[in-house]
Length: 389
Ligand SMILES: [Zn+2]
Ligand SMILES: [Zn+2]
Image 1 (spheres, rainbow, N blue to C red):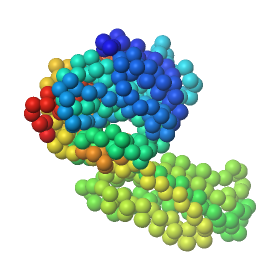
Image 2 (cartoon, rainbow, N blue to C red):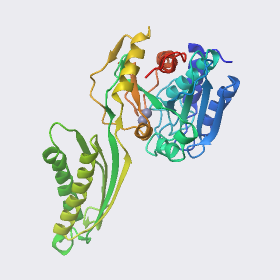
Image 3 (tube, rainbow, N blue to C red):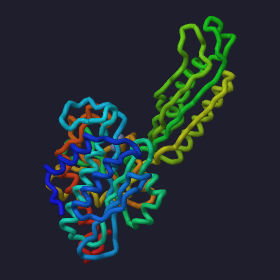
């Protein structure tokens, strides 16, 4: 048994923060998760999600067949930490800049607390998922059979949220995070002397026009009541004053919520590039990858989460009307398979933003997150005498 205290949560969190590991390489993180689970006598399966994922479970003392899943992501980012704190990253160029050290800590805290007092019916699964950032560890876990191997009726997630005060939460009825696609386009023309551009085919001019053209897809073709972002984030061409380069490479990302709009944006993106390439006599090579779908809560499950939050003494306010974020989340893959909800818990109004080198998960949030998970499990699973929806 492990008795969870704010001090213990802080120790765990600082330890995870000091040793950040990125996608599918979370070996020490995973080993520490296992150690904490074993110390608390909690059953688990390791080696999931490509190797570093862990699923643990606690059975309630009232029997019962029902089961729910609570999920935390455990990976860090390729960011050089700028914080000067004792628990700062000891791995240069990697840091927990998205607070997944806190997510891991809160889920471990909930597992230990529920193992110590399993006053519910059924089973709670604790899903420790690798590689949330960019690489879709959530998809890998789903594809390798998360929900067949560990049957559960619903699944729940949490993200700490900068800008919201500690003690505030946000619950969305449906869309909460956007879909996430990335692209890389290489235009190949004909390099030449910059003083004689008529002898070549100018990829820089074509790429500049293309950047403008793409913005029209969002501003002129996307209905104003829908939301989309198409951002060109990289533009690589040339390396001399007097040489027209042969190639240019553009990279970027596309975000939206509606699946039909997502298809439309990709189609029009490809058409815009093909047309521009034809006009300028260029060859175009397009690598367009659909990464994460949009994250949609199930309204009934979101409502239960909000009800549970309202009962917690340390939660002062539950926002029910915040707009969704244009950032993305691979928990979307789990919510495609099971109903559930992904909520935001305030990391502080003065918190650095997610992925910023000054970001640090707020230790004051950890006990609140544990209290939420524990209350959610107890409320949803009940004591076996009544059937919680
Ligand atoms: Zn992130
Ligand atoms: Zn995150």
